[in-house]
Amino acid sequence: ELKVEQNPLFLSMQEGKNYTIYCNYSTTSDRLYWYRQDPGKSLESLFVLLSNGAVKQEGRLMASLDTKARLSTLHITAAVHDLSATYFCAVEYSGGSNYKLTFGKGTLLTVNP
Amino acid sequence: SQTIHQWPATLVQPVGSPLSLECTVEGTSNPNLYWYRQAAGRGLQLLFYSVGIGQISSEVPQNLSASRPQDRQFILSSKKLLLSDSGFYLCAWSVLGAAPQPQHFGDGTRLSIL
Image 1: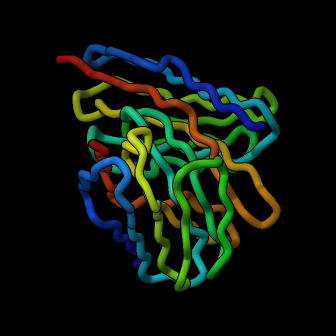
Image 2: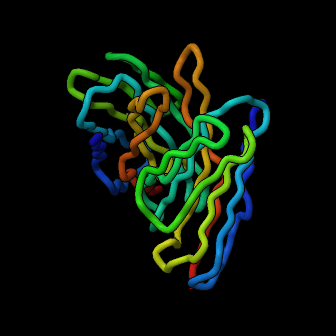
């Protein structure tokens, strides 16, 4: 059974600071996704990471994937209040021709002025 | 462009009542379709997925069922709701293509059982 662990689960930051969210998973996979969820809303896709060493950046967020370590990171640079949300990583595994995601529990990020 | 619609957005139901949540996708053909539940605003649990009309796979034993009567329609049902069925239900779609694509989520249905 594929397990996905995120840490920290809760993160309170000051604006302007940097921090990293970690996502570990238990079995081999080279497809990992990061999503953002605002309170009471649905999930929005942020990044798709498809190979070892993949790095994607969008604004103040940068995601990377190390498939050998089974680890992905989401780095936040110079945080701003608008980044406050819950961030999920999800790992894809293939059940035959069906592609399913296993989600981490999410990291609730609060950016304080 | 592709869009996904879920309804209703909010639902309050008594224990023991039936349930029907509907999800439709537009702008794509033969999508994979998924139902998730999110309890207490945290992690997502995959309930059902479907790769084609009439093809449903259940991930966890529960009080719910799913059906796919048309290519782009996915329905989540229950004959008798339990208190534990409360949660935020999300429908999602994806397609298999040359490059892996993320799953795209609907706006969700917030279900409260009284």
